[in-house]
Length: 247
Image (tube, rainbow, N blue to C red):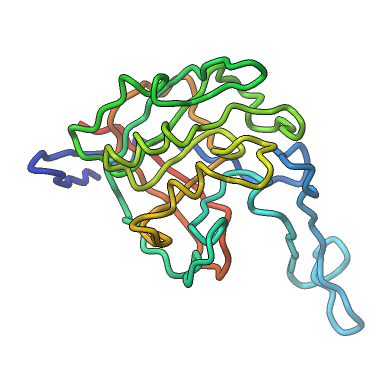
C-alpha cells in the first residue's frame, strides 16, 4: 500500500511494505546496556491458585518483565527525564508518520572525548522541514545491539550541536548512542536540557530516542518515520521505530 503525505508543499510517497526497523529489542540475555543498570528480568506469575507458565502446567503464560527503559534497548524519552515537567509519556502525541532525515556522522576527537558539535553537523540542513532526525554514528557495526557502554565514555552531543539541530526545526532526535550527554558530566545533562526546553519551559512536543541501530544498508536521506510509543505514565518507555524510504 502507498501512503502519500505533504510537507511544506512537497508531496512524499512511501510504500508500507518497504521499511527498515531501526529498533533494538529487549531480550532475555545479551542486551545492550549502560550506566551499570540491572539487566532485564523475566518471571512467571505463580501462587497457590494459578500458575502462569505453560511449562509448569499452567493454562496460559503470564510473564512479568522488569527493566530500566533507559538501559535496555531502544527507548523514547520526554522532558520529564531531566526537567520538572507536568506531563509524562502518557501525554505525548507523536505523529503516526512524519518526515525524517537520516544522516551519518563521525564524532570529533577532543582529548578523551568524542564530540558531536556544530562543526561535525556543519553540513546538516533542513530545507525540507523534516521533524525527525536519525543520527548514525561511525563506526557503525552490529556490536551496537549488545554493547555494554558503562565506563566507555561514548560519543555525545555538545550544547551547540543540539542548538543547531533545534534551530533547523527538528523536534524528534533519534540516535544510536546511550545518551546525548557525556556519560560522566556531574549531573549537568546540558544537552538534554537544551533540547527539551523551549521558552524556558519543558516542551511536550519534543522527544529523544536512544539506542537505535541504523544498518549500513540504509542510505542517508529522507524517510517517513513511524515512532511506536506505548502509553505509560513515566519519563521514558521502550519504543520501536520504522523508517520508510521516501519516493
